[in-house]
Amino acid sequence: MTGEPSASRPRIRWLRPLLSWLGLALAAGFIIHTLRRDLAEMGPIAVNVPRLAIATACFVPVYAAFGWGWHLCLTGLGGRVHIASSLKHWYLGNLMKYLPGKLFTFAARLERFQRFGVPMRVTTAAFAAETILLLSSGVILLALVLPFSGLSITTPLLAIGGAVSLPALLLLHPRVFRTIADRMQRRLGRDPVPMAMTFPQLARALGVFLLGWFLTGLCFAGVCSAMAPCERGYGPGVVLGLAGLNSFTWVVGMAAPVVPAGLGVKEGLLRTMTAGYFPEAAAGVIAVAARVWMTAGDVLGAGCATLLELVVEGRGDR
Image (cartoon, rainbow, N blue to C red; front, side, top):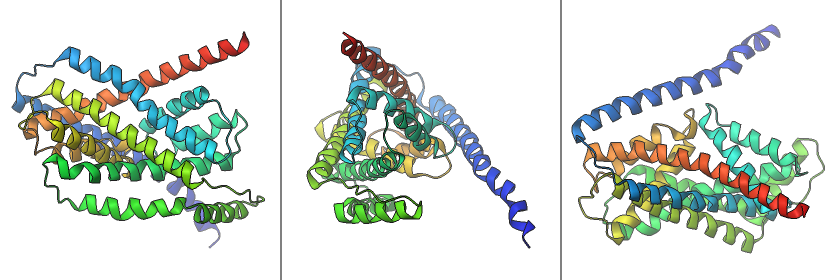
């Protein structure tokens, strides 16, 4: 009897990475197959290169709003790191989301911020707060802009997202969060250290994440306008709708199990939900282009944040 669990552990240990790589292969195959079909149906694409370049250039500083939100969570829970270093290591850790497995980003954050003397329990608590605020704000944005978007979305995913993400915000209530953190620290055999963000800190961080989703959505609308015409034109309602759909589909993709960075899930959902704005084939091409665009923004942002840290350190040495 005692030998059975140990014998099964190797199989269990390899099951998760196997499923992750399988999910990655299936998602990549789905995207390639769908893209080839959509390109054939759509025909030649007249990309507005200057508009696409402007959307990409604006996206790099805009995306830093999410890094700022992370910094607010970290400092609100007692971490002491300069904003430039915080942004750099947030960006670099964020690149790990493209690896199969959902824990690489978290592990990278722990390792990188430990170099600055941030206790692992603080980084863990900040990561939990950031995740809740990030996912909830993405759903909230779609709920806020939906009445102005001209879309009639009745997908159960929106109801599920609201039912899950909004109550999750209650976990960040200072008293609730402190109780959960204390119990987890005791289970790990550590003396509990009070950790909780105040209501003003939570409101500020939630506002920053909402701002990040909104500005990112405006850049996404710029990408759409550079790729294909919209059946309703690119008026304010359409731009707001695209911003909300961008945030919501990213939230669902991030929450999806197995596949890294929601690969395939986000694209398929975005293709379906933008059917009110674009022909199906154009929506599919835009969804894949948005993935490439945002990945490029991740890499460019990491480079810019690294340069910013070097500049700050250089000024400090003078």
